[in-house]
Image (cartoon, rainbow, N blue to C red; front, side):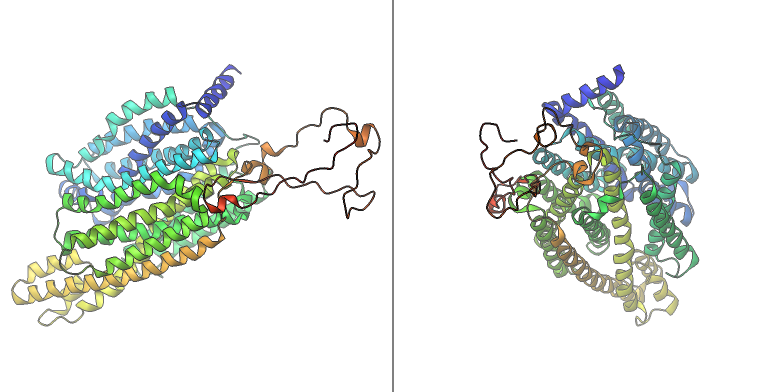
Length: 591
């Protein structure tokens, strides 16, 4: 009993005072580590390959084990945090993340590194939804929560973009394991800080936790993500059993999971959230935004390193304007959301990003720093604006008692969008790139076929050929890659404009409405007991002054609750629905 009281007091203190901003700082540091670890290994892959000599399959699992395991376990740990306590799950994730980082840093075989990366994925799945659900709990006011989410999304962008830069710096001075060692001192500080500062919060806790449902969701998401990744790798035919099998099994398990949740009296995830257009649309916008971002980042890195021949550190520095623009969008997101509302913010964010992508079509074989910087700034600002407004709308539509499940849905959508982006845009890129190498003058057909796999492999084949044939193959590969880049950018812009149309289903204004628990009939929606004498039951009919047009003997419908807007712009002055003023009564106070 005393533990519950202490946790409740800590949560009230964090929600009501300046301490909630300290809580936000701890949560942002947590998210920074997870986002950074998702990308920091990318530049270390050549060094890992040279040292551990993994097979092609093992190398694929070294890279993919972390995002695959993390994505599949988000729903499991997000809903578990609602039951056991989000702070408790978060602290356990800290500890596991630190231990796994140490194992990965000193791994001496590919198998050990794969296992360590999988453990990092488990820790990341414990941390990511917990940060967002705790944020939802300590910022009950939507205005302040919008500011907090803006900071949270900006930190996520910083972590993802800083990973390659930091990894490149460490590789130039230390061995590849150093990219994992940076987590350990930070975890040694944040674990006791989180234990002391973070409040405990949990959902309603009604009924048993659905273990079978959680495992079904984990297996379903894993199958779906694995199938999408294999589709994007392009090693097998899209209709091969190795690709179609995981997709079908994953989709079937997720369908069964949804049906199971609808039948259970105490589901892991309240499926009624998806009946609200704003929630479903926000999730769809997150998928589309990540689909465009990750695919474009992957292709942009290849362009900077292989076409413009920049070093890993120079590549990371070129991408920094995107990061700074994303930080600016997150910092100003709360103000923008109040001024123009979710619909315009998400829609115009998509349109701005599409314009930035079309501007980057002007990229060619030579370096144009001003064009790249302008395009990356617009791209970062537009995408971060979209992600911020989509996350804020999604979290505000979810009931407080299901914050962990809602956060897990948002993060799973994030991961699925990233995987789909690599698969879809990578396939478009390959389809536009390969035909240009089918018949290069003086180049054998076998060499042209090998060069069609990727630009990096084309350079290796060209170096082996040497002479005029090698130079011809290298030139053709560069031209084909730039052509494929332009086609991919146009396809990406079309997807982003489709996201802008999807955003039309979002609310026009940011409403300071009652908690979503009340709208969905959650635990906070229980009617309050009526106190005091009730005229209709205790004293008989009460004389009333009949309103014009009313029918005698028929009770007027209860007016809808007032809905206020949070905004400050023109839309904020749309008249809110108010309860009608009841006619004055003689000799007693109106109820």
